Length: 190
Image 1 (cartoon, helix red, strand yellow):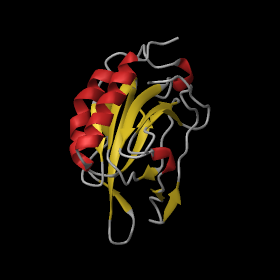
Image 2 (spheres, helix red, strand yellow):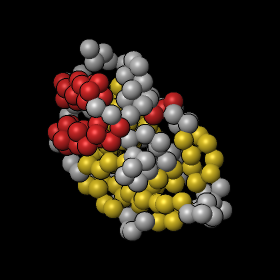
Image 3 (cartoon, rainbow, N blue to C red):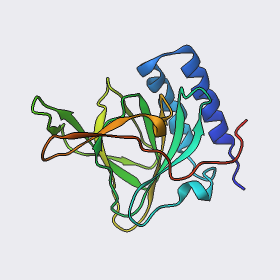
C-alpha cells in the first residue's frame, strides 16, 4: 500500500486555499503545493496509474464533498492526446512521470480554435495553470510515442461533473461533454 501522506497534505492545502481565496488566486497559491506533490511519485497508487490502450485516463484521486475542488491523475498512453477543450474553472497541472505537450488555443469570431504560440513541453516536476483568465482552451498530448506519462491536476470544481466543450479544429463547432472518471481512489484521505 502506498503512503498517501503527500496527497493528504496537498488536499488539506487545497481545502484551506479554497476556503479563504477565490478563483485564480487559488490557482496561483496551488502552484508550489503542486510542485511539492509531483517531486516524488511513490505516493501514487498503482490503480491510479493505469493506462488504456486507446484513450487517456482521468482517475479521481479526491473530490471535495462540496465539489469546490478535485484532484485527478491523468494517465497518457503512448502518443495519446485530448481533443481541443476548455475547463471553465481554474486548474493547476503538475507532471509526475514522463512529459506532455500543451498547446493553447483561442477561439476567434468564426468559432474556430487557433493556436496561441507553440506547444509547451512540460517535463517531470513542472507545473502549469489553466483557467478562463490564463488560457482555458488547450490540447494536451503525451510527449512520448513509446511510454506512459502521468500528470496530476487540481481543479476548482469536481471536474468529472463539469459540462465543458470540445472544439473541432476544422469546422469550429463546439460540443458539450462531461468527462467523468476512469477510476476512483477508494482509500480514505481523512
